[in-house]
Every structure is written in structure tokens, then in C-alpha cells.
Length: 145
Image (cartoon, rainbow, N blue to C red; front, side, top):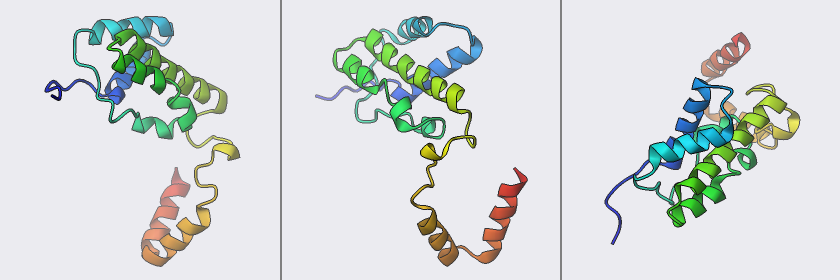
């Protein structure tokens, strides 16, 4: 029989970890994990069908932000909030480390350029299906940023 209680998603817990970090930038990761355990213990565990943190894809490569997801999955499977929190904090730490070493969005190196290899296809598709005035508007918008 399936559980009827719905808990927070992995992304919800990750966002909470980010909020804790924003409230106190100097807080050690182990303290973030402890606070997550205090806040979420006793409640339902996140569903395992959606182990992802979608907005992190814009901050760091998947191999960084997803680093802790195996720990999160094991924590959910073993009904262990400490494991879940440790995985969340690992993903947070990896994302922050990537940003501090590589810079924020738009300052990345060629290795992590997400348009590499698809640029020609995108241009062809946009050229074929997007009206010329919208292309010019998008180009002007991009140069104004």
C-alpha cells in the first residue's frame, strides 16, 4: 500500500539548506545538516521518484550539484534523516565550491559551455522557425545585459 503522506521533495530540502546558508554564510556544513535533521525529522521522507534539484543546473554542472543524491537516496531508503541531510549538504557544498572556483553564471570556461556542440542546430532551428523581428529583439536584449 502506498504512503498517503506527502513530504517535502529533495529540491525543497535543498532550497531550505540554501536559505540557512543565506541567513548565515559562515555556518559550517555540519550545522546546516543538523538543522535540516531537526526541521524535517518526524515528517514523511521525500519521494524517490524525483531525486533532482532542477534549478541547480544553471549554477553548476550536474556532476557537482548531484554529488550528494546517492546519499539522499540511501537516507530515504533507510529512513535516515541524517543520511538525507548529509547528501543535501554535500550537493550544496559542491555547488558552492564550483561557483567560487569557476565564477557565477555567464563567466564559465569553455569546458562547461552548455551550448557547445548544439550551437549550429539551435541557430538553424531559430532561423527557420523564429520570426526575424524576434531574433533581432532577442539579440538586442542579450547585448544590453
